[in-house]
Length: 205
Image (cartoon, one colour):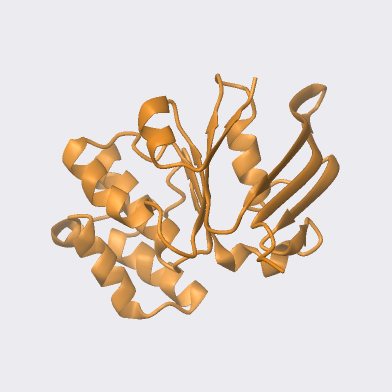
């Protein structure tokens, strides 16, 4: 018997008041695969990622992530998921190094992991400056480091190249790209680039 899917959704629905953000979504993503998600603004792409990250609760349907039922077993999923959102999800008054060391302690990751990631994204020299003093592109690099710090089994990426120049995209790409044992859900507007590194595609209307 093969490995169960990393993500199984059946009739997943999420509303914001009267507005339906996701309606009756059913899909299955094999473990280790990359799913790319396309769609216009407001189609529910970010909502889907937040549901998978256990930050939102569905209003209908069934969701099973990494073998656990959501939302009831969300506690068992959160430490195995990495989210790179539109907002960087880092503490603006802390330095990049302080942010990553905090998340390392939170997840029980080796302290050296933070230092290695800062070096990998070219942030070692600016690592002790408060995040709010950094450019948006540098902050995005720190956010990438935070998302992969604990080596998550499921990586959720919302427009990961946002605010990054070509060199930074290359550095970051090495950290968030496909790799054995990692399932990814990638929201992107760059169809050609995203399809080149994906196993399946989902179009939300």
